[in-house]
Length: 129
Image (cartoon, rainbow, N blue to C red; front, top):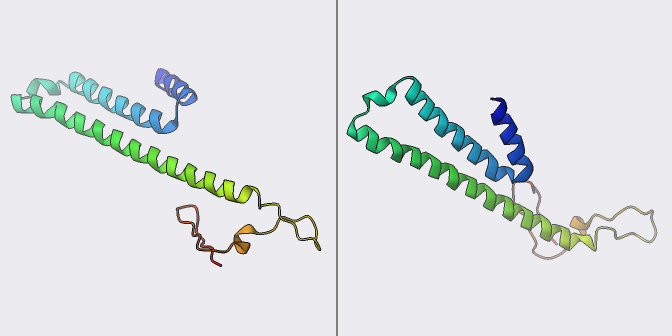
């Protein structure tokens, strides 16, 4: 258990969480299945069909984890792209000051015009002109 925590911490220091967590979970699951099969002698009762289906089942689970982790990476990349575009559009405008008032930043979203709409889990608003 201590070694697991050590290698998980090292992996998280060196690589992205979206890579480490699925790999860690898959490795833990695979080693638990093998250890349980050996310790409880579950493999002794395997038939030819069981031996054929067992690796296929493990492979399907591992492929499923891989596919789900790929979706998370894609969603994160899209989110970062949206945030970068939002920062790029508002970086030059976010400090607009009203000449007659104090140095408060102006509300850019209320001053925008056009057909820009922001969608996503962290944007619960729409801007319109």
